Amino acid sequence: MMFDLIIIGAGPAGITASVYAARKKMGILVITRDIGGQAAWSGDIENYTGYQFITGPELAGKFEEHMRKYGIELRENEQVLEIKKKNEGVWVKTDKGTYEGKTAIIASGKRSRELAVPGERKFKNRGLTYCATCDGPLFAGKDVAVVGGGNSALDATLQLIQIARHIYLINITPDLTGDLVMREKVRENNKVSILNSTRVTAVLGEKMVSRIKIRREDKEETLPVEGVFVEVGLIPNSEFAKDLEKNGRGEIKVNSYNETNIPGIFAAGDVTDVPEKQIVIAAGEGAKAALSAFRYLAQHR
Amino acid sequence: MDKKVMIYSTLACPFCMMAKKFLKENNIDFEDIDVSTDQIRVQEMIKKSGQMAVPVIDIDGEIIVGFDKEKIRKALGL
Image 1 (spheres, each protein chain N blue to C red):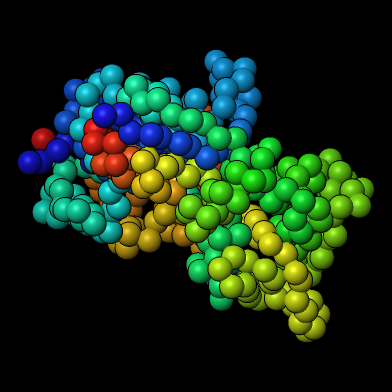
Image 2: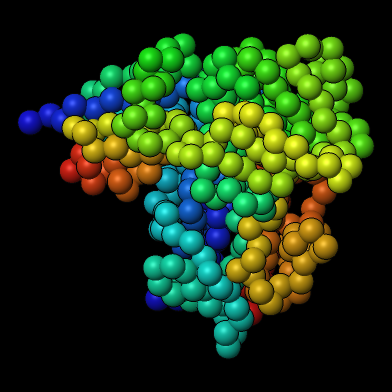
C-alpha cells in the first residue's frame, strides 16, 4: 500500500496536518507513540485562540476527535526507527513494520531531556519523575530536589512549595534563568534552598530514591531527598531522521514551506528549528506542511 | 462479570484525566482514588505497583502503571 502522505506524530502539528491533508482527500497514514503529544501534558492553556481557558488533556481530546472525524488510518503506540527517501517516495520503518508513502511529514515533537547520571533510569517512577504536576502530590511532607533553573523548574518548585517539606533547587548555571516573577517567589520562600552552579552526579537509594549526590565547586556532597523532579528542558525526537539536516540542538531544519533538505519529506512543530514552541504555532506549521505536501504531490504526479 | 476497577490519581495529572476519560467512554465503572490528599492510599498504591507515579490502575488485581491503552483494553477484555 502506497500512501499519499505519512505523518509521524500526533501532537498539535501532526493532527492539524492530518486534518488539512484529509480535506484535500489525500490517502494518509498517521504513525505515533501517543495522541496529543506535549499538549496533553500541559496544565492550563490560556493562549490557544478560541479557548480562553482549556486544560491540556481537554484540548488534546478535541484535537483527537477532530482527526478521528475524518476516519484517518492511525497506528498508535508505534515508534518510528528510520525514514529515508526510496525511489521517488519515502520509506518508513517502525518497531512494528515498514510503510511507503509518496510524501511524509515529521511532526514527532520533543521529549523531556534526561539528566544522564547513574541511577536516573533505575529510579524513574521510583522517586524520580519528569512530571511534577502528576507526581508532585505523592511527596507530601517529604524533602525533594528539583533539578533545573528555567521556567519549568521554577514552576515545579512553586507547585511543590504547597506539598513538600523542603525543596532543594539544583541549578547548574550561576543564577536562575526563568521569569523574574517566579524567581522572586522562589527566592522569598524559606522552604526552598537554591543551589546554583551545582550539578547532580548520581541518584541513589534502595527500592526508592533516598538521596542524591551533588557537586558544587569541585566539592561532592550527599543530599537526603525522597523525590527528584527533573526539569532540564526538552530535546527533539529527531534521532530516527538520520538523513535530515538539523541544527546544533538536533532540530530538523525547515524553510518557510516546511521543506527539509530531502524533497518530499516535510517537518512541522516542535521537532523543527522554527522559533517559539507553542501549541498554536505547531498547529499552524502542521497545516502549512500538509499544504506543501499536497502541492508537492500535484507537481510530481 | 464486571471487573473491579480502581484508579489512583492526582487532580492535575494529564494522564490520569485521559485514563478516566477512556474508562468513561468505554462505560467502565471505576473507583477514583485521589492520592494527593491521602498518604495512606499513596502507600497502598506504592505497595501494589512498586512505583511512585500516577496513574496506577488496578483491574481485578492486575496493576497497570501509566495510561497504557493497550494494556487497559487487554485487562478489561475490550
